[in-house]
Length: 299
Image (cartoon, rainbow, N blue to C red):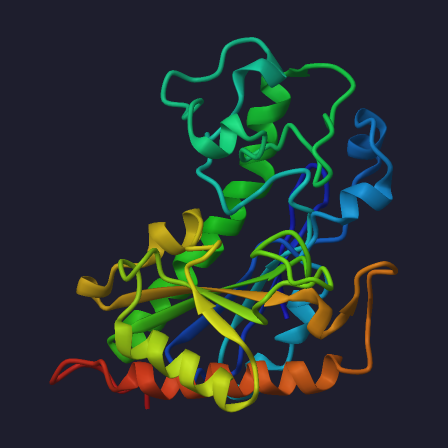
């Protein structure tokens, strides 16, 4: 286990790398962090139980055995309510801050307008997070301490995989609530178990998306593509199929593995984890098929 530690606040990102990479896959879990700093908790006006609703709880643990397949796993251990690394670095709401943001800040994206920028304005329940505006220096400092180390590590991993194998697949791993995300049934549950996001064909070769869908449906999961989650910043930023780098976002229905009321894993956790690791291996082997002639084998 290799750790990149923030020198000031001590909020880590964790990276588990295999001794010998054997597949051209990188796994990332940007929203499963559970380490809330005392300073953050003192600055917000919503209870911690509501903060935790924003977590992709235990997604990092679903994929924790991936290094045994020869695949690295990067996870943000800080929560997305503090800093959301699946946004642009400066995707920020100016109304949240005292002082002026840099001129290059993206202050009008749909995510910022919705209160869900790189530093969120709203909780998962739609309530204002902060008691008062933040000093702009604090916001930019949080981006430097949390966002930048995470993406520095992720870019390194993707580049290393491509250099080793001639091709790379980034799988950005998320979870979604069982109700309210995709369109509810009469029982209040979403209609899909898994949502695969490739920005409507822009970030990942269709052969990989088809392989993912076939693998999951063959194991009994209901799968849809790009609705309502087509892929966030990470998928769109790193996915460059023409350059041999593919990115696929996967959203997992939390009811498959989690008691959403208590935020604790259920008895089905181990079986879901095994299926997801099987998916990673299947996609890794299919990704190798996309190498051009004369490209590295990774052996």
